[in-house]
Image (cartoon, rainbow, N blue to C red):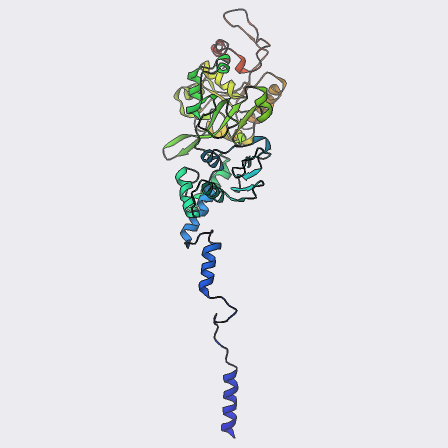
Length: 414
Protein backbone atom coordinates (compact mmCIF):
# COMPACT_ATOMS: atom_id res chain seq x y z
CA UNK A 1 0.00 0.00 0.00
CA UNK A 2 0.97 3.65 -0.25
CA UNK A 3 1.42 3.88 3.54
CA UNK A 4 3.77 0.93 3.59
CA UNK A 5 5.79 2.40 0.71
CA UNK A 6 6.02 5.77 2.49
CA UNK A 7 7.23 4.12 5.71
CA UNK A 8 9.89 2.21 3.75
CA UNK A 9 11.20 5.43 2.09
CA UNK A 10 11.28 7.21 5.46
CA UNK A 11 13.31 4.35 6.99
CA UNK A 12 15.78 4.50 4.06
CA UNK A 13 16.20 8.27 4.45
CA UNK A 14 16.71 7.86 8.19
CA UNK A 15 19.43 5.27 7.60
CA UNK A 16 21.31 7.60 5.19
CA UNK A 17 21.56 10.51 7.67
CA UNK A 18 25.25 11.42 8.41
CA UNK A 19 26.35 10.95 11.99
CA UNK A 20 27.60 14.16 13.69
CA UNK A 21 31.41 14.65 13.81
CA UNK A 22 32.94 13.91 17.19
CA UNK A 23 36.28 13.09 18.84
CA UNK A 24 34.59 10.52 21.06
CA UNK A 25 36.35 7.53 19.58
CA UNK A 26 38.75 5.08 21.21
CA UNK A 27 41.45 5.82 18.58
CA UNK A 28 41.32 9.62 18.98
CA UNK A 29 43.07 11.30 21.95
CA UNK A 30 41.07 13.86 23.94
CA UNK A 31 41.65 17.54 23.15
CA UNK A 32 43.13 18.06 26.62
CA UNK A 33 45.98 15.67 25.78
CA UNK A 34 46.92 17.71 22.71
CA UNK A 35 46.97 20.90 24.80
CA UNK A 36 49.32 19.30 27.32
CA UNK A 37 51.58 18.02 24.52
CA UNK A 38 51.77 21.51 22.95
CA UNK A 39 52.63 23.22 26.22
CA UNK A 40 55.32 20.66 27.09
CA UNK A 41 57.03 20.32 23.71
CA UNK A 42 56.00 22.64 20.89
CA UNK A 43 55.85 25.78 23.04
CA UNK A 44 59.57 25.87 23.86
CA UNK A 45 59.99 23.13 26.44
CA UNK A 46 58.12 24.87 29.24
CA UNK A 47 55.15 23.42 31.08
CA UNK A 48 53.66 26.90 31.21
CA UNK A 49 51.44 28.04 28.34
CA UNK A 50 53.14 30.73 26.22
CA UNK A 51 50.76 33.32 24.87
CA UNK A 52 51.14 34.91 21.45
CA UNK A 53 52.59 38.14 22.88
CA UNK A 54 55.36 36.20 24.65
CA UNK A 55 56.24 34.30 21.47
CA UNK A 56 56.57 37.59 19.58
CA UNK A 57 58.91 38.94 22.26
CA UNK A 58 61.02 35.79 22.12
CA UNK A 59 61.48 36.15 18.37
CA UNK A 60 62.43 39.81 18.81
CA UNK A 61 65.02 38.97 21.45
CA UNK A 62 66.43 36.21 19.22
CA UNK A 63 66.80 38.61 16.26
CA UNK A 64 68.29 41.43 18.33
CA UNK A 65 70.70 39.31 20.40
CA UNK A 66 74.45 39.76 19.93
CA UNK A 67 76.98 36.93 20.11
CA UNK A 68 79.69 39.47 20.93
CA UNK A 69 77.76 40.39 24.06
CA UNK A 70 77.29 36.69 24.87
CA UNK A 71 81.06 36.23 24.58
CA UNK A 72 81.56 39.14 26.96
CA UNK A 73 78.98 38.07 29.54
CA UNK A 74 80.11 34.43 29.72
CA UNK A 75 83.80 35.26 29.17
CA UNK A 76 84.15 32.82 26.26
CA UNK A 77 87.39 32.21 24.36
CA UNK A 78 87.36 32.86 20.61
CA UNK A 79 89.69 31.22 18.09
CA UNK A 80 90.08 33.82 15.29
CA UNK A 81 92.26 31.56 13.14
CA UNK A 82 89.35 29.21 12.37
CA UNK A 83 87.03 31.91 11.04
CA UNK A 84 86.84 32.04 7.26
CA UNK A 85 83.84 34.36 6.83
CA UNK A 86 82.74 37.68 8.32
CA UNK A 87 79.55 36.14 9.70
CA UNK A 88 81.09 33.28 11.71
CA UNK A 89 83.01 32.78 14.96
CA UNK A 90 84.65 29.66 16.40
CA UNK A 91 84.63 29.36 20.19
CA UNK A 92 86.19 26.89 22.60
CA UNK A 93 83.26 24.89 23.94
CA UNK A 94 82.27 25.93 27.48
CA UNK A 95 80.52 22.56 27.83
CA UNK A 96 83.56 20.31 27.31
CA UNK A 97 86.48 22.65 28.23
CA UNK A 98 88.32 21.67 25.06
CA UNK A 99 91.70 22.89 23.85
CA UNK A 100 90.69 23.39 20.20
CA UNK A 101 87.66 25.51 19.33
CA UNK A 102 84.91 23.33 17.87
CA UNK A 103 81.81 25.39 18.60
CA UNK A 104 80.67 27.21 15.46
CA UNK A 105 78.57 30.38 15.69
CA UNK A 106 76.66 31.95 12.80
CA UNK A 107 76.34 35.69 13.39
CA UNK A 108 73.85 36.14 10.56
CA UNK A 109 71.48 33.38 11.74
CA UNK A 110 72.19 33.71 15.50
CA UNK A 111 72.63 29.94 15.90
CA UNK A 112 75.40 27.68 17.18
CA UNK A 113 76.62 24.10 16.78
CA UNK A 114 79.00 22.61 19.33
CA UNK A 115 80.66 19.65 17.64
CA UNK A 116 82.37 18.48 20.84
CA UNK A 117 79.24 18.19 23.00
CA UNK A 118 76.62 17.74 20.28
CA UNK A 119 74.63 20.74 21.52
CA UNK A 120 73.16 23.21 19.07
CA UNK A 121 70.33 25.64 18.48
CA UNK A 122 69.67 29.35 18.72
CA UNK A 123 71.42 32.02 20.74
CA UNK A 124 68.69 31.87 23.39
CA UNK A 125 69.10 28.12 23.80
CA UNK A 126 72.84 28.66 24.26
CA UNK A 127 72.25 31.21 27.03
CA UNK A 128 69.76 28.84 28.65
CA UNK A 129 72.32 25.99 28.59
CA UNK A 130 75.01 28.23 30.08
CA UNK A 131 72.71 29.44 32.84
CA UNK A 132 71.67 25.85 33.57
CA UNK A 133 75.34 24.95 33.84
CA UNK A 134 75.63 27.64 36.51
CA UNK A 135 72.66 26.19 38.41
CA UNK A 136 70.05 28.65 37.14
CA UNK A 137 67.17 26.76 35.52
CA UNK A 138 64.96 29.12 33.50
CA UNK A 139 62.13 29.01 31.01
CA UNK A 140 62.72 30.57 27.61
CA UNK A 141 60.72 33.64 28.63
CA UNK A 142 62.87 34.06 31.72
CA UNK A 143 66.02 33.66 29.62
CA UNK A 144 64.77 36.34 27.22
CA UNK A 145 64.20 38.78 30.08
CA UNK A 146 67.65 37.97 31.48
CA UNK A 147 69.27 38.60 28.06
CA UNK A 148 67.61 42.01 27.80
CA UNK A 149 68.68 42.88 31.34
CA UNK A 150 72.31 41.90 30.63
CA UNK A 151 72.41 43.94 27.42
CA UNK A 152 72.74 40.87 25.19
CA UNK A 153 69.54 41.76 23.36
CA UNK A 154 66.77 44.33 23.15
CA UNK A 155 63.05 43.76 22.77
CA UNK A 156 61.75 46.24 20.22
CA UNK A 157 58.48 46.34 18.34
CA UNK A 158 58.50 44.02 15.28
CA UNK A 159 57.95 46.94 12.88
CA UNK A 160 60.97 48.75 14.28
CA UNK A 161 63.06 45.62 13.69
CA UNK A 162 62.04 45.58 10.04
CA UNK A 163 62.95 49.25 9.68
CA UNK A 164 66.32 48.67 11.35
CA UNK A 165 67.10 45.77 9.02
CA UNK A 166 66.09 47.77 5.95
CA UNK A 167 68.21 50.72 7.08
CA UNK A 168 71.26 48.52 7.73
CA UNK A 169 70.86 46.83 4.36
CA UNK A 170 70.58 50.13 2.52
CA UNK A 171 73.34 52.07 4.28
CA UNK A 172 75.82 49.26 5.02
CA UNK A 173 76.42 50.02 8.69
CA UNK A 174 78.09 47.88 11.30
CA UNK A 175 76.04 47.23 14.44
CA UNK A 176 77.12 49.12 17.54
CA UNK A 177 78.48 47.17 20.50
CA UNK A 178 78.45 47.95 24.22
CA UNK A 179 81.90 46.57 25.01
CA UNK A 180 84.21 49.48 25.86
CA UNK A 181 87.81 48.56 26.64
CA UNK A 182 89.12 52.11 27.03
CA UNK A 183 89.16 51.98 30.83
CA UNK A 184 91.56 49.01 30.67
CA UNK A 185 94.00 50.49 28.13
CA UNK A 186 97.39 51.65 29.40
CA UNK A 187 98.99 54.63 27.72
CA UNK A 188 102.51 54.18 29.16
CA UNK A 189 103.64 51.14 27.16
CA UNK A 190 107.24 51.37 25.83
CA UNK A 191 106.10 50.73 22.24
CA UNK A 192 103.83 53.78 22.38
CA UNK A 193 106.72 55.83 23.74
CA UNK A 194 109.00 54.53 20.97
CA UNK A 195 106.45 55.55 18.36
CA UNK A 196 106.09 59.00 19.93
CA UNK A 197 102.43 58.60 20.89
CA UNK A 198 101.55 60.44 24.11
CA UNK A 199 98.93 59.59 26.71
CA UNK A 200 96.89 62.59 25.55
CA UNK A 201 96.68 61.25 22.00
CA UNK A 202 95.86 57.76 23.30
CA UNK A 203 92.95 59.09 25.33
CA UNK A 204 91.74 61.20 22.39
CA UNK A 205 91.70 58.24 20.00
CA UNK A 206 90.83 55.53 22.52
CA UNK A 207 93.96 53.41 22.15
CA UNK A 208 96.61 51.83 24.36
CA UNK A 209 98.11 48.61 25.63
CA UNK A 210 95.59 46.02 26.87
CA UNK A 211 96.99 43.93 29.74
CA UNK A 212 95.41 40.66 30.75
CA UNK A 213 92.76 41.30 33.39
CA UNK A 214 93.43 39.25 36.52
CA UNK A 215 89.73 38.55 37.07
CA UNK A 216 89.14 37.22 33.55
CA UNK A 217 88.71 33.44 33.41
CA UNK A 218 89.82 33.11 29.78
CA UNK A 219 92.19 35.05 27.59
CA UNK A 220 91.28 37.33 24.71
CA UNK A 221 93.39 37.58 21.54
CA UNK A 222 93.42 41.33 22.21
CA UNK A 223 95.38 40.86 25.43
CA UNK A 224 98.98 42.13 25.39
CA UNK A 225 98.40 44.02 22.14
CA UNK A 226 98.20 47.71 21.30
CA UNK A 227 94.45 48.16 20.94
CA UNK A 228 92.57 50.80 18.96
CA UNK A 229 88.87 51.37 19.47
CA UNK A 230 87.02 51.80 16.17
CA UNK A 231 83.96 54.03 16.38
CA UNK A 232 81.25 55.08 14.00
CA UNK A 233 78.64 57.82 14.07
CA UNK A 234 74.87 57.48 14.26
CA UNK A 235 72.30 60.17 13.65
CA UNK A 236 69.26 60.43 15.90
CA UNK A 237 66.87 63.05 17.19
CA UNK A 238 69.61 64.56 19.35
CA UNK A 239 72.10 64.91 16.51
CA UNK A 240 75.24 62.86 15.84
CA UNK A 241 76.37 60.35 18.44
CA UNK A 242 79.55 58.21 18.53
CA UNK A 243 79.08 54.43 18.74
CA UNK A 244 81.63 51.69 19.33
CA UNK A 245 81.99 49.23 16.44
CA UNK A 246 84.93 47.04 17.46
CA UNK A 247 88.43 46.95 18.96
CA UNK A 248 91.51 46.10 16.89
CA UNK A 249 94.76 44.87 18.42
CA UNK A 250 98.26 45.21 16.88
CA UNK A 251 100.64 42.33 17.65
CA UNK A 252 103.77 43.19 19.62
CA UNK A 253 105.65 39.94 19.00
CA UNK A 254 106.18 37.41 16.23
CA UNK A 255 104.48 34.80 18.42
CA UNK A 256 101.31 36.90 18.60
CA UNK A 257 101.48 37.61 14.88
CA UNK A 258 101.87 33.93 13.97
CA UNK A 259 99.11 32.88 16.37
CA UNK A 260 96.37 35.42 15.60
CA UNK A 261 97.72 37.68 12.87
CA UNK A 262 99.38 41.09 12.80
CA UNK A 263 96.03 42.73 13.55
CA UNK A 264 93.14 41.03 15.32
CA UNK A 265 89.64 42.36 15.92
CA UNK A 266 86.16 41.12 16.70
CA UNK A 267 84.21 40.71 13.44
CA UNK A 268 83.07 43.87 11.68
CA UNK A 269 83.16 45.09 8.08
CA UNK A 270 85.97 47.64 7.82
CA UNK A 271 84.95 48.20 4.18
CA UNK A 272 82.00 50.19 5.53
CA UNK A 273 83.96 52.48 7.84
CA UNK A 274 86.54 55.27 7.98
CA UNK A 275 88.72 55.23 11.10
CA UNK A 276 88.51 58.39 13.26
CA UNK A 277 85.37 59.62 11.49
CA UNK A 278 83.72 60.36 14.84
CA UNK A 279 86.34 62.93 15.86
CA UNK A 280 86.19 64.60 12.43
CA UNK A 281 82.48 65.22 12.95
CA UNK A 282 82.24 65.72 16.71
CA UNK A 283 85.50 67.40 17.79
CA UNK A 284 85.45 71.15 17.14
CA UNK A 285 89.22 71.36 16.57
CA UNK A 286 89.14 68.50 14.06
CA UNK A 287 86.06 69.96 12.39
CA UNK A 288 87.74 73.35 12.00
CA UNK A 289 90.94 71.86 10.56
CA UNK A 290 88.97 69.71 8.12
CA UNK A 291 87.08 72.78 6.92
CA UNK A 292 90.31 74.70 6.45
CA UNK A 293 92.89 72.14 5.25
CA UNK A 294 90.77 69.27 3.97
CA UNK A 295 90.88 65.60 4.93
CA UNK A 296 94.13 63.63 5.28
CA UNK A 297 93.42 60.04 4.22
CA UNK A 298 95.99 57.49 5.46
CA UNK A 299 96.30 53.71 5.62
CA UNK A 300 96.46 52.85 9.30
CA UNK A 301 95.81 53.54 12.95
CA UNK A 302 99.36 54.60 13.81
CA UNK A 303 99.41 57.04 10.88
CA UNK A 304 96.40 58.82 12.34
CA UNK A 305 97.90 58.67 15.84
CA UNK A 306 101.16 60.34 14.75
CA UNK A 307 99.32 63.04 12.78
CA UNK A 308 97.08 63.76 15.77
CA UNK A 309 100.17 63.86 17.99
CA UNK A 310 101.56 66.56 15.70
CA UNK A 311 98.34 68.56 15.99
CA UNK A 312 96.82 67.46 12.66
CA UNK A 313 93.40 66.33 13.80
CA UNK A 314 91.93 66.23 10.29
CA UNK A 315 93.33 62.72 9.72
CA UNK A 316 91.41 59.50 9.03
CA UNK A 317 92.37 56.02 7.84
CA UNK A 318 91.12 53.44 5.33
CA UNK A 319 92.53 50.58 7.44
CA UNK A 320 94.28 49.39 4.28
CA UNK A 321 95.71 50.64 0.97
CA UNK A 322 92.49 50.31 -1.05
CA UNK A 323 89.10 51.97 -0.85
CA UNK A 324 85.72 50.26 -1.09
CA UNK A 325 82.43 51.59 -2.39
CA UNK A 326 81.14 51.57 1.18
CA UNK A 327 84.02 53.79 2.30
CA UNK A 328 83.42 56.17 -0.60
CA UNK A 329 79.76 56.38 0.45
CA UNK A 330 80.92 57.05 4.01
CA UNK A 331 83.11 59.93 2.77
CA UNK A 332 80.15 61.30 0.82
CA UNK A 333 78.10 61.15 4.01
CA UNK A 334 80.86 62.91 5.98
CA UNK A 335 81.15 65.61 3.29
CA UNK A 336 77.41 66.28 3.59
CA UNK A 337 78.02 67.29 7.22
CA UNK A 338 81.44 68.93 7.06
CA UNK A 339 82.57 70.71 3.92
CA UNK A 340 86.24 70.04 3.18
CA UNK A 341 88.10 71.57 0.20
CA UNK A 342 90.08 68.47 -0.77
CA UNK A 343 91.41 65.05 0.21
CA UNK A 344 95.15 64.47 0.60
CA UNK A 345 96.07 60.82 0.06
CA UNK A 346 98.93 60.12 2.47
CA UNK A 347 99.38 56.38 1.95
CA UNK A 348 102.55 54.37 2.63
CA UNK A 349 105.73 54.83 0.64
CA UNK A 350 106.04 51.19 -0.49
CA UNK A 351 104.92 50.02 -3.97
CA UNK A 352 101.58 48.79 -2.60
CA UNK A 353 100.91 52.20 -1.07
CA UNK A 354 101.86 54.10 -4.23
CA UNK A 355 99.73 51.84 -6.43
CA UNK A 356 96.87 52.04 -3.95
CA UNK A 357 97.05 55.84 -3.90
CA UNK A 358 96.61 56.03 -7.67
CA UNK A 359 93.63 53.66 -7.59
CA UNK A 360 92.01 55.46 -4.65
CA UNK A 361 92.51 58.83 -6.36
CA UNK A 362 90.81 57.59 -9.51
CA UNK A 363 87.82 56.18 -7.63
CA UNK A 364 87.38 59.31 -5.54
CA UNK A 365 87.74 61.53 -8.62
CA UNK A 366 84.79 59.74 -10.25
CA UNK A 367 82.70 60.61 -7.18
CA UNK A 368 83.49 64.31 -7.39
CA UNK A 369 86.23 64.57 -4.73
CA UNK A 370 89.19 66.91 -5.35
CA UNK A 371 92.18 64.66 -4.53
CA UNK A 372 95.91 65.26 -4.12
CA UNK A 373 98.46 62.47 -3.64
CA UNK A 374 101.33 63.08 -1.23
CA UNK A 375 104.63 63.22 -3.13
CA UNK A 376 107.21 61.09 -1.33
CA UNK A 377 109.92 62.28 -3.74
CA UNK A 378 109.52 66.00 -3.05
CA UNK A 379 112.27 68.09 -1.46
CA UNK A 380 111.44 69.45 1.98
CA UNK A 381 113.34 71.89 4.18
CA UNK A 382 113.40 70.48 7.71
CA UNK A 383 114.80 72.56 10.59
CA UNK A 384 115.55 75.49 8.29
CA UNK A 385 118.08 73.48 6.31
CA UNK A 386 118.44 73.27 2.56
CA UNK A 387 115.53 71.32 0.96
CA UNK A 388 116.31 67.62 0.87
CA UNK A 389 114.48 64.42 -0.10
CA UNK A 390 112.43 62.78 2.63
CA UNK A 391 114.77 60.22 4.28
CA UNK A 392 114.40 56.69 2.88
CA UNK A 393 114.01 55.38 6.44
CA UNK A 394 110.57 57.01 6.57
CA UNK A 395 108.15 54.49 5.05
CA UNK A 396 104.80 55.87 6.21
CA UNK A 397 103.33 58.86 8.07
CA UNK A 398 103.80 57.08 11.40
CA UNK A 399 107.58 57.01 10.82
CA UNK A 400 107.75 60.80 10.69
CA UNK A 401 108.60 62.84 13.73
CA UNK A 402 106.18 65.38 15.15
CA UNK A 403 108.51 68.16 14.02
CA UNK A 404 108.63 66.84 10.44
CA UNK A 405 104.84 66.65 10.21
CA UNK A 406 104.48 70.15 11.63
CA UNK A 407 107.00 71.39 9.04
CA UNK A 408 104.89 69.89 6.24
CA UNK A 409 101.85 71.71 7.59
CA UNK A 410 103.71 75.00 7.73
CA UNK A 411 104.68 74.49 4.09
CA UNK A 412 101.00 74.08 3.24
CA UNK A 413 101.33 70.43 2.22
CA UNK A 414 98.68 69.42 4.75
